[in-house]
Image 1: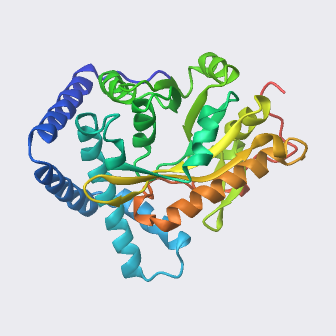
Image 2: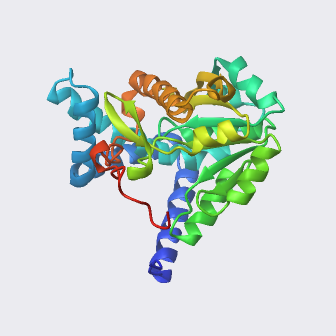
Length: 312
């Protein structure tokens, strides 16, 4: 079914977003982060649906924590992402090749750097954690030409605006659903491709442990790594100080070829990078996007073996 177009609404939202960015860039930084705090408080109070999702996710992920501690983590999640919006607006005016260390401290840099300099393709796996946009932006500022897979926004004006930011230092954005040919060409040529790998994949996904529960994960990362003989690094960018102080952490680095002979290679690779993502998130749980339904699909919803797929 074709998506319903809303040209007037889309343009209004775009104008409001541009106005917000202009104001954030014009006022003192402390004021901008003050507004982020107010926005977070308002969203936490009135966004009941996502607040309930976050609370339920956190109760399962951290069963040892009290209800009060869980509620504080939920508030922290709203604060983090409201602040993240402000930081993304400020980043083009703040970060450049001469001062990147002011904002981003590499952790386990040799593992990441080795993959970036290798002629073989590299898959950079991350999640909705910390400031995932910063890594690609900073790598571009340092001269590394990377690709990032992203979902196309429904609002075409916001899509173009966001891509100007994402591609401002040389990163190339590939549409999640429509750029398969370009993606294949990039990986075949030894490209370095980043992807968010923490989204629910539905009943067709592979189920792997994630915070003590089976989570449906996309098979694409593992399949691509095996097909194109790629290396994989798992990266997170947690905020570790103010103002805008981050670490770029390479949590794990491994070679997909080490799993190629295993009958469960796809699941084993997917389990490994999910375990690394979990370690990152556990160290900074308030910086993960608990508001989305990561465990939406349950193993019981997988198609029965006797069912034939359409066209089979």
